[in-house]
Length: 138
Picture 1: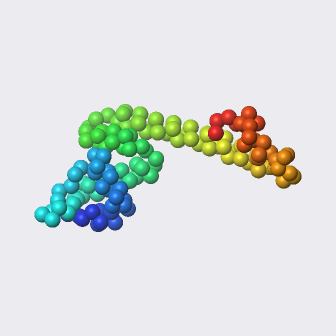
Picture 2: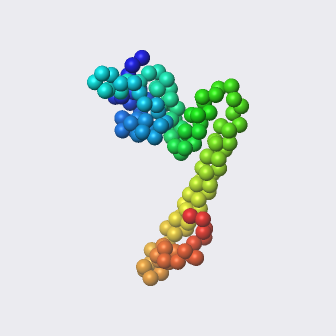
Picture 3: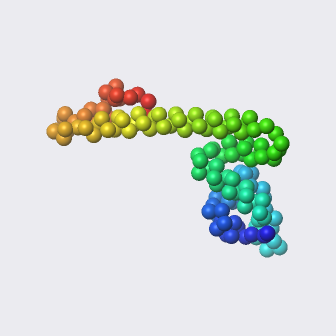
């Protein structure tokens, strides 16, 4: 299978500039090229790019994806490191959720303003003084 970059993009749902970027940073190997210097990709590139795209959709950072891809090179190895990388990402996601929940709760409290005058507006008061927030983790 020899795919041009546009066809690789269509098959994987990854934009052409993103594919080039992944090549630049080493997530994708430099492809073979035609005599006219056009990139050509094979089925292993499709699988690898699908892996990268899905990992990005799940929020993994580029460096974690690089580590995960490196680990896939040794399929007989125990998956403890994969678990550790994924657990660290899960911890980050849970932390974000906690901060976003606190942010949502704070905003809900703020919009409970009774719409009197700006001089008495809860939203303005809280924005002016962080100490008036119910949550300090946002």
